[in-house]
Length: 180
Ligand code: FES
Image 1 (tube, protein in one colour):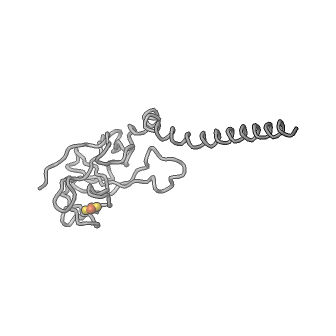
Image 2: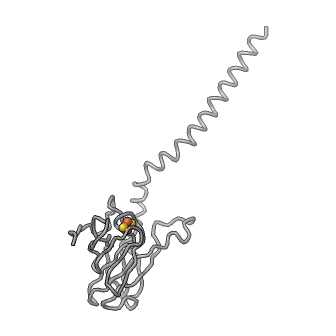
Image 3: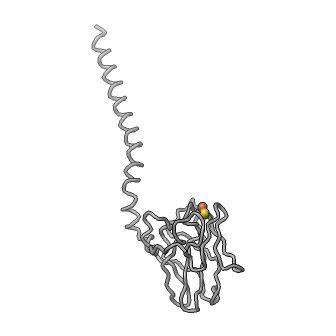
């Protein structure tokens, strides 16, 4: 006579088990789907295409190369100071500029500008670049990555949403310069 009760209890546990497995399945699937859809979501936000000001042109004297920073437009509230990104600004002749990513084209270490020798040098493996960003020597296979820039209302702006990498840097000037 206890058989129907056992079956009923077994049914109940089976349904609870299926329900809990369903919840766990949803919890696991949601981040995977969000990851897969993230490129589309980012494009919709348009922040990759945004222009960011590096400051007034007066901060970048003609013939000099200066360090500048900008706030990554794709920042999230938890990013803090890591969203402040440095770059090198070269005022070529008062009219034309070059804005270089600070990261070495080899493995990404921050390069430093040495005005005495007019060279960018990488502290990690000895990569060296000329003042126009072209590769001079060392392990990097190409010159420094360059941002697109424009001047508007006396400010220097760069297209900065996407970090410069060899892979998918659609907003970075892609010219590969020959080794010197
Ligand atoms: S990271 Fe700059 S030379 Fe290797």
